[in-house]
Image 1 (cartoon, rainbow, N blue to C red):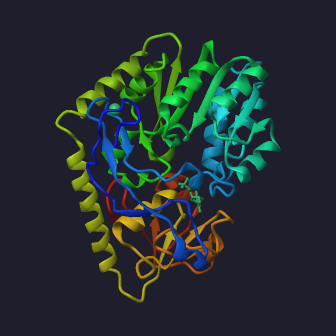
Image 2: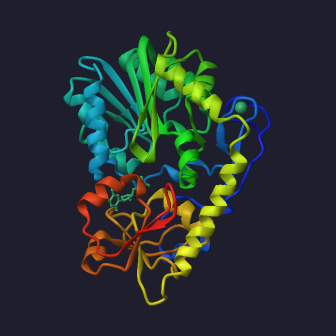
Image 3: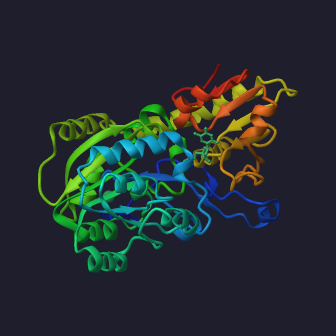
Length: 389
Ligand code: TMP
Ligand code: ZN
């Protein structure tokens, strides 16, 4: 296997074992044909890019029934509203790659931007179409030519939690560079590798995250296509993200340079063997927590998140540990969780009859959840540390 960025040979530094697709919630009849792949991350010794060895075909993940709607999270809606307001987009042409249900586009339009969204998943794209101009396709060279025929160049190309999903990053970077105006900006944000390492948030590793970026690897990958990293800014979303700004010309800002410096410092001595050991340790500690729960007590999962698929399957947790998972997304309710086959129930079931314990799978939304829930039982958490409180 070769690095997707620089084509040097890569080798996995650990494996999470056989894994189903994180968002492939299923009906009981589908269990027989459930798809599994080997979830094993690698770090390229030449360019430093953190990436998955094997990734399922993107068509298996971003299809006509993509499970996540951005607009269902109040926190994310506010995040995109704040971001839209921080950008001088009035009268500018803005392309959002992977616009999901159009939440961000809506805020950009309210701010006077002329927007086009590109979104491959038909169900979320349909919702986005109510808000504006959407191309329901994967972002590729043909789409770029269509866009250039419509708007010539983009003043802004924006993406959130999308770029790390795209395996052919060289193709992608070339397409972005072609579409971006000479003085345009490409701004994207993704879960931040160094936050994941620091918090041992191994559940960020799943099929959709083919890469985990940091400023150094973004600089390398996009630099190959003439784009310069000019800024980066930490974000609290998804348990710790980074927003990167790239342009055709320019130099890293002071904070971007400082971030790169800190990443070089923290990569000394090879942090990945220690990360692997901390993952195994977390798995053992979670088992100790479940072993101490009396068998007659009830345990619910809170949020049927993509991340929970890695936790449940890597830790070997099933319905005997977590009796059901509550989630607000109608499309997930009534189905079974991927691999572990735990039933997904509406959030109203959680409130109707509180369980004794709830394991917080949606830990990245903890602030929003703690503010709205009056749960009388105990929370089980595992980021940054395993705990019961
Ligand atoms: P994600 O972390 O994989 O993006 O998905 C978050 C999931 O958590 C999504 O299915 C909605 C669910 N959720 C709840 O059920 N209740 C909540 O309060 C929040 C914030 C999310
Ligand atoms: Zn490489």
